[in-house]
Length: 299
Image (tube, rainbow, N blue to C red; front, top):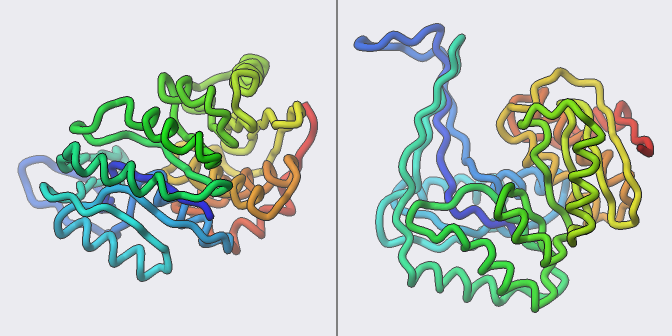
């Protein structure tokens, strides 16, 4: 079983307006509500690819209950902890010629609620996979992910990490089955430099290291020491929400199916490209339509 962890989920309220004027009433052309958070996004794309998972984390208040109902309605299994204080945050995302976002504050998480999460995580069976990443609520210690890995690793739970900086560095000694480097958002132009970073992360313990060079190029430093690149002809829109989460889900779905490194990378790249073109999380039909256009070569 695959478990995903989202410590700071959000209801994303997307509003499209032709322009935005301060100090007056603005009317929207369209609006939508999406359930956000790295772990939740991965669970959604896994479901789209026919892979079961359980979404875990924290929910609070009426917005948290709305998220629970919404995830249930789309067929996701969940095991969230209900917080006593506050409510799951709402992020307002305004789409026009000058996009704007307003992120709501997270709810308070108590030490007792952290302990309850650790207890639930300790029940995950050996051989299962835990996927985590993303930011944490202000009231939660920044070393929470390290504590979680210290709980899960001795139980032979496989780890997949989508985090950067200190969190990623702390994860490598636990030999995660998959990590993602953030090469594209750093506007990295030197492919050899990114390859060196991926190899270094693999040498420090990661089994598979995936990194986007652009919206249509993804590299993999695989557990078998191979270096691979996948290319899919899509527009250069990697910064769209959900693209990296779709990429992670695609690779994990490939591992779940027993695919080799090249085919896991191919599925991951097609999933990311699908999210880029859809401007939402990847769907199975769009992924499958792009698989034939995705080419994997050795570096």
